[in-house]
Amino acid sequence: MLKITFVCLGNICRSPMAELIFKDIVKKQGIENMFNITSAATSSYEIGEPIYYMASKTLTKHNITGSHTARKLNKQDLLSDFILVMDNNNYKNVLKLEGIDKNKVFKLCDFTSNPREVADPWYTHNFEKAYEDIVDGCTAFLHYLKTNNYF
Image 1 (tube, one colour):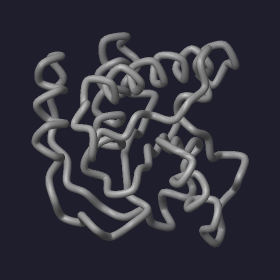
Image 2 (cartoon, rainbow, N blue to C red):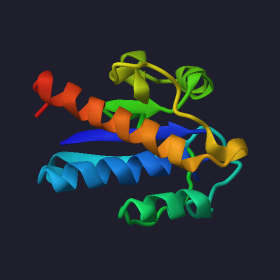
Image 3 (cartoon, one colour):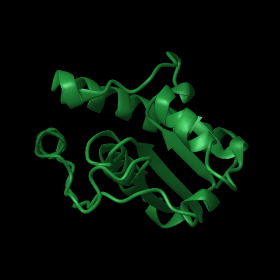
């Protein structure tokens, strides 16, 4: 079973969206039992909060459901097979953690044909753009896993 942890700053927008989107993708393919999928924050700003309502609204619009409570990245998460971050700041913050295997940390959209950061909707409120980036990243990441015989 592959453990995948999605990471962003507060764990209320992008990383829980990625968690729920990736869960939906693998469930639709009938391979959800091959994964342990979670998400976490690099900060403690939003710990205990639910997924941000606009992120949830965007997921619901695309028929993706699920609940989430924000939490901070912990030592157990560092044992993940892949730690997929949303942007350059998350990447730098995760690489600073003691005990991190740097070979497991990737930016989600680096798996796509158009490597980039996942658009941050916190200030722009463009959750649809974040959704599109995340779907692109998750789809490309799953293709990478299949192509490289991870399961």
